[in-house]
Image (tube, rainbow, N blue to C red; front, side, top):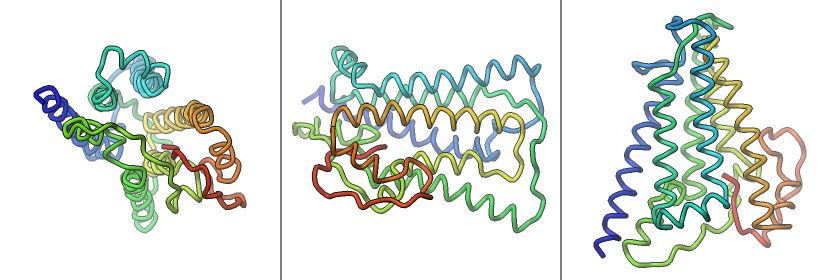
Length: 255
């Protein structure tokens, strides 16, 4: 029982750390935090770019490698399965906090929207993007995604069961509405600085690449069911006509 309590406390603390860092990251991207994407150059251009791209690479490698099934199989020989997800969240939180802490603005303005109504509209898209990210996590089981469900089940001595597949409304429009929310939040800014543009381009490229790895794993795990879903629903842009998703064989949801 003592170990299960420790696991639960660990998972809860990690979740709170993540939540605080996530909220700070919203302010960081929006330019409301003590550190921000935007601002005057604080280092030579090549140095700042090298640091910023290295920070993004650390986040991308951590986020993708630790999410792969082969890594999880090896990792859970060291880390108990009950806290595997919480540990992943801890490392992801550390990588995100590192970006917020060490990011180097590089100055320069790519575009600046001065018209008040247009600025309000852009900030509305920014807020909508972050809201969409949060809502999507609850639609696909927020507490499982961030490790709390796993440590709770361990605490009450219940076996873990994977979250079953479901296609709530947004998942019938695009396969990755959570990632779409991030893209809206990263690109919607009335003042696009050079550093913000680097961030937006790099994170967009990473999201598109990460989706390929993620969908490869889902197709391997769920076979024809996911392949059918992938054919029927667009990846990120809900512009093309799509067929209805058959209710049979639903076993996983793309995150």
